[in-house]
Length: 51
Image (cartoon, rainbow, N blue to C red):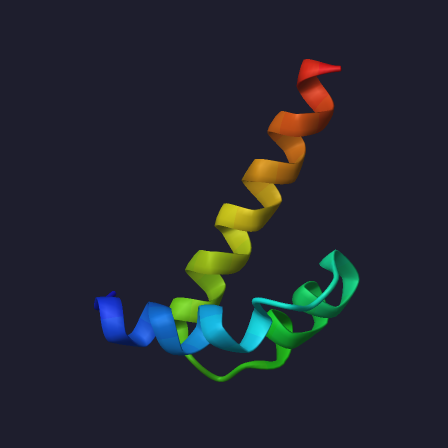
């Protein structure tokens, strides 16, 4: 995944809520969006495991 491809996706989800971000990433046709979606799921899982 190149930086420009990731940046294009991140700019679209930057101001969205968590639910909106999941919907947007699931509907995007880019391969990089799947990787970013996995990263967000992992981050949220880590937050809830620490509590």
